Every structure is written in C-alpha cells, then in structure tokens.
Length: 160
Image 1: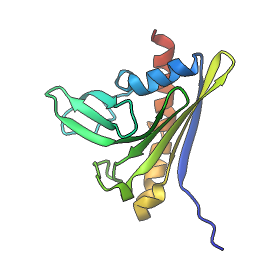
Image 2: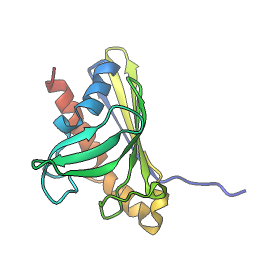
Image 3: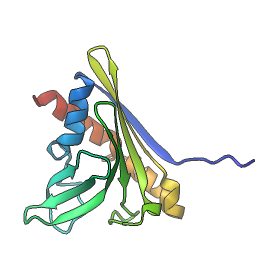
C-alpha cells in the first residue's frame, strides 16, 4: 500500500477576541488587513480584496477602476468556526480557473477562554506538479502566511 503525502503550510496565531469577531474580521473585512500594496495579482494596484460570505462565493481583488481579478472561491463558510477557500493561483501567481489545479486554504477559529486560536492551513500543493514544493515554500517564507496572519492579528487588535 502506498502512503500519500500532502504538501501543506500551517501557521497559528492566538488573538484576544471572540471566535465570532475573529471570523468576521478575517472573512468579512479581509481587505482591511490584507497588504494589497504588496500582495495583489492584477495589472493595477488593488483597493479591496473580497471574500463573498457564502459557499460558492468568489474571492477576488478589485482595482480603483472597478476591474476585478479572481483569486479563487469559497468552498465552506461556517461562521464562527471555519472558512475554506479554493486558491486558484498558479505557481506564477496568475488566476487558473481549472479546479483540478486549485490548492486549499482552511482557516479555523477555536475558542480558548477570552482568546481565539486562529489556524490557517494551506494544502494540496501536489496538484501543482513539480512546482508544488516551490509554491509551498513561497507561502511559508517571509511575507507569506505567517506574516499575513500577524498582520491580521494586529489589525484585529486595533479595530473595533
């Protein structure tokens, strides 16, 4: 029997907020904390990044002129516990509409007293073939998910 391995990147941050608030800020105010100046894929700078609040919703960036650039889709929207996104970005960070090439970003929100443990796992890089490890290493490096969750945590602490 062959054992299947899954390439993944995981990071966790503990925030001083209810799970409801932590989920709301992550999912519904994504554009408030996401560093659009350095993390966008459109030809123009992004002015907002949106996660539509439902399974099947879009995940996309919007430029000042209204141009939209897809990133992926919501596959599970379960406030305040879980959000799953299909990441449709190629190894070159271009939108790839083929669902067979999508990786998965799962974010969970677990209560811990007055805090919430937010865990983000980006997995399934093997669908990207030989470049899967490269992409996993990229999202695990400085500027990747660890830094992004820290940016989210700071934004959450400062917002009301």
